[in-house]
Length: 105
Image (cartoon, rainbow, N blue to C red):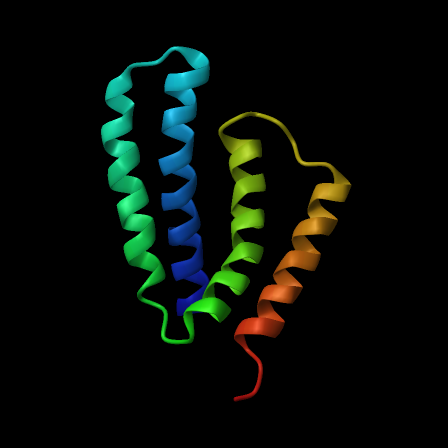
């Protein structure tokens, strides 16, 4: 459970770090958004180092969780409800994440 929670925190840090520059570039918001964006991306990189397994495996498994968190962001922040295809894709991605992270060692 700790691994999954850490992946969620990592995904949120990455999404915020990318979303804030998007607001500046595409929606004309303040360039000051780049300051918390940079901090969020630094947090993202640091959170990735907290995992106890090989980095490549962590990055591969993290991708599955990132997809799920990104679709939640789409729904909650952007107000766009994910389709059944989106949900199916998340299920496949999370299954892959589980296979990668929780394999017998």
